[in-house]
Length: 258
Ligand SMILES: [Fe+2]
Image 1 (cartoon, rainbow, N blue to C red):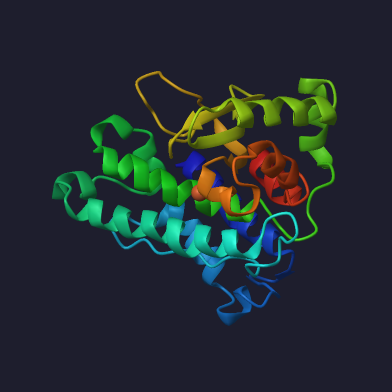
Image 2 (image 1 turned 45 degrees about the vertical axis):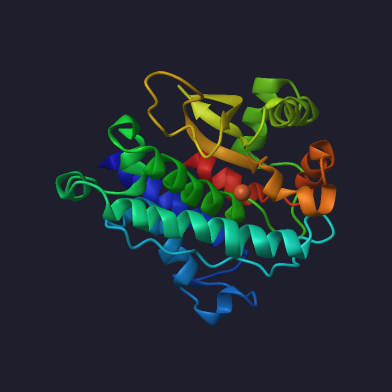
């Protein structure tokens, strides 16, 4: 229970930090989010708290589609968010409808089902992962982001990898070496920072019979072609280089500290 609460708090905190504005318990000062000030916080935190009942919805972006220009272009952001992410949400809800009612009733949250992933069909794994990973990814970027992480995360990165530049090199290598579609991750595994990657929409929270990267996400990079093909075509390296200019280190720090 304590772990669930901790996780819930850091997802909320990440959502708050990604907006750059905190006013008491309400937030946001961007064109997108101001339409419904509490929406993002509610919807990001629902990843952890909402009963697993098939009523997931797309979280509000904490910035406009063109806010990450010139590093990530407007059209890519719009299609990535409104088409690709929306499809994961829609298909997750559809897949939940086909599940045994007992399984649904005994599942507390999206995060909780990742811990028993092998009990669920492929459609839940792919679309549940897709919804979770993208929700995290949006909050891990921001306009005028980049630079270097401060605080405990910055110290831990230097202590683990020798320098921030060496960390960037290893994370970029993991992004480049992921064959086909997938994600690169910085995770906390047994109290240590570890870089790795996962295929498709898998993530390090998923229990996959001992296979794959395991840990709590701190940083995530989508390396599916849909994340960069319109702007960079086949040049994944250019996209990875661009990512360093938009990283929301405050959000990563919040995940790390939780
Ligand atoms: Fe994606």
